[in-house]
Length: 154
View 1 (cartoon, helix red, strand yellow):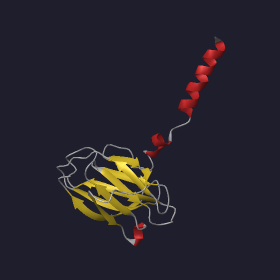
View 2: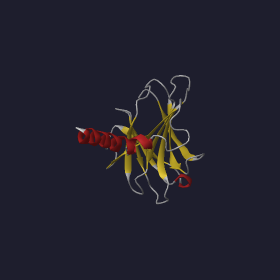
View 3: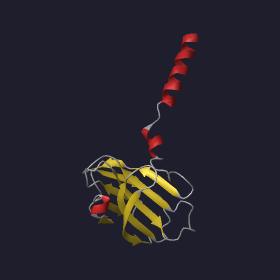
């Protein structure tokens, strides 16, 4: 009996002592998470579907990050286009911050140069949103994003 109890305790400790990567991924920047920011690390995928959304590319100063938004399902795709050691980032921001307490969404691709990541957000379709792409330079301070386009009704 004692061996069974000790085995159960050891199993519980092992499960909770090793933090799942998804638990840790949500605070990869000082602004994540808080009352106005939602942060996700995307799952690695082959790329966005060939139709159903829009894509844009950030400039050279932000690492040539490609961001695609697939409106059906509120999916954001991020491609890391530079071997600079920084995670590629997408930013979806509400133009009207009074609509929802979570008015900025970050999607991180930390899989390296040439890779794609997909995040699945749930946002208010009736609000105008701006899309940005760039890189995360460090935990405190800088997430460089270029404004790529705006959309609403999706």
